[in-house]
Image 1 (cartoon, each protein chain N blue to C red):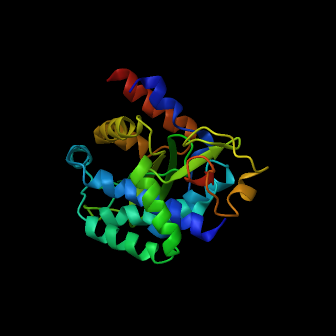
Image 2 (image 1 turned 30 degrees about the horizontal axis):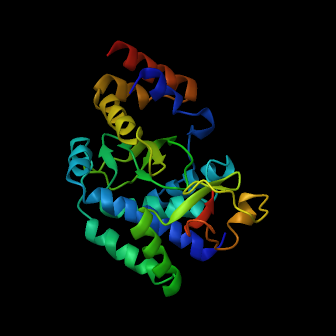
Length: 115
Length: 155
């Protein structure tokens, strides 16, 4: 798998985790279930460390697309970008092949991750 | 969340009767490798990294021998649960310091609406002393499902 894509997927998942950890309703639910949420700063630091491994132009694009659509990486199934539901024109026959290179959807610009 | 809906999340392919790991880090590796081997996810490293980072937010061990590491990830196609047993237990930084004998790892896609209801129902089940004690003794997926079914149909 492409290293940059792998780090981007983790960053997006961390962004989701951080966003939920800032949501009072979700924190209450988690705490009622017995999970202490007290390490948000550490999580943010871990995200910052990960970002250092991503080329700035890629991360800038990630931020622009995220600001526009909420998520900057779209899952791909059967060669369809599940962000905008457009078929990917390139012939990709496997998840391995799809995730070997960092690609954008030509229609919506989201980075693509074959699930 | 309905009984049937809750039960169908558990998968015999994702039930580890006696995992080989002795540390929290290795438990995450073993579980993520199983997810990759069963093609539930594409890349184990993503899940290992996320589960480790989720622990930085706060331990997912809830005490009494149980841990429920959980996170959302686009690596998962659907709500996925792995159950792992370890009779001698693993240190998981539990609030009561007890070693963990059952691990439930829950991975949900970002948009999954059943994630928190499932987690809530699981915690409710595990808070029941009788169900918890029975679960800590199960040795097979069949036995595991029987305990859960009986608890949920009697509640």
